[in-house]
Length: 257
Image (cartoon, rainbow, N blue to C red; front, side, top):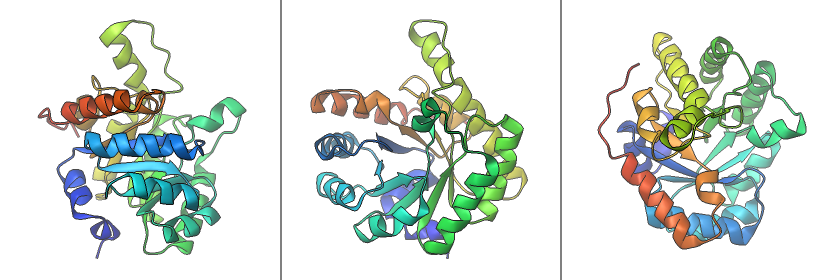
C-alpha cells in the first residue's frame, strides 16, 4: 500500500483531484501565537494541509488550532522529525530552503538526496515531501526529483519565489514572481511522468491567487502558499486570503504535462 494512502481521506482526495492547498507558517517561524493564528485562518479558509516548523510543541499548538486539518512539519535535519511525528504531525518535509539562501546556505542535489535517504530510514512509514532547490539548473532539478522519488520521497515540492525579480506591477508582476516555481513544476511533473513515477508535485513559493491555476495547469497536484498569508498581522485578513486562494483553485484547468 502506498504511504499516501495513510493520509486523511480529504487530503488524498485534494491531491488526486489536483486542488490541494497547503498554507505554510514558515520553517523559521517558532512563534506559537503566530502559528496558531495562521493555523486557525488556514483551517477556516479551506486549506487541506498546514505546514509548520519542526518542533513538537509547535505541532501541538497547530493541531489544537487547525480543527482537524493535517499538519506537516518542515526541517532540514531528519533527526528532528521523529519527535514531531510523535506529537501529531501527519507528514514531514525536507525544505523548503528559501529562508537559508539569504544566509548563504545552499543545498546541493547530493545533500538533499542524502537527507531524503536518512529521513526514510528513520521514518519508513511516514509520508515524506521533499523540496527541490530552485538554485539548481532546471534539468538538474528534474533529475533530482526522479532520484528523490526512487529514494523514498512521496511528494515533490518546488520553490523559486526568492529568486524571481518581477519587473512589472499588478497581474504581470505576480506572474513574473511565480515564473521560476511554475517552470520547475512543469519540468518536474514531465520528468516524473516520463520516468513512470506518480508522486504528486506541490508547487510553492511566490504564488498568488492569480498564479495558482497556472501551477495546476503546469502539472502540480497542489500548491503551497506562505508569505501571502503569514505576512499579514490580522487573522481575519489571513482568512480572507486563504479563502481567495481556495476559490482560485476551484477554477477548472487542463494540465499541460
